[in-house]
Length: 228
Image 1 (cartoon, rainbow, N blue to C red):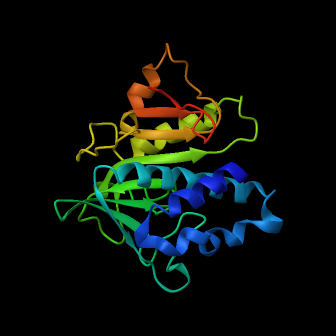
Image 2 (cartoon, rainbow, N blue to C red; image 1 turned 135 degrees about the horizontal axis):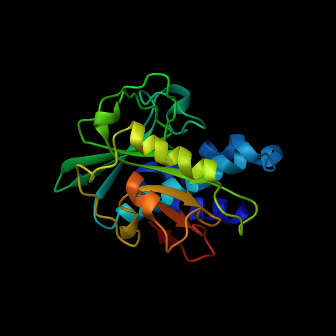
């Protein structure tokens, strides 16, 4: 995970609003050291790497503001799905106007109360509630880390994410435009992995049906490819 942690440190230095990250200890200490070989720790580091990559990319076209959390979560992002209230996040501004929120690990309510599928990254409308529902969503993203970088996302991972977009009514065009820079082709519901996509580039019918894209080879030393 060293490459991912190194990039997290580098990206942290670009986020002036969260200068405490320049040591990275505040955020990553609980999942480093003796836990480095813990799959759950690897998953979290990769999810956080993806999150910061997106935030740094958005800085090109937006004024990005870090919103501190509360208590133990003042600078610490949750390591599993958690309530949005009191957790840190980022806001994107254009001409001093809030245009969207970028949240990590936020629980999202939907009309199917038994479904507890919460995205790793959610883009939410500027007026999104502290207890957000599907009406607050613009797009969502999930990050899937694999040790076997040549392996494909599994059918179950792909179908589960497609089901989430369906449950959250995200199969139509996003309700707000998000202007990415180098990641401009990721303006979609994205399933991100450092490995390979589940779908074949020549057969994306199901991806289009669920309004999702797969982002493969998303890691420091590879060139990403987007399918869907």
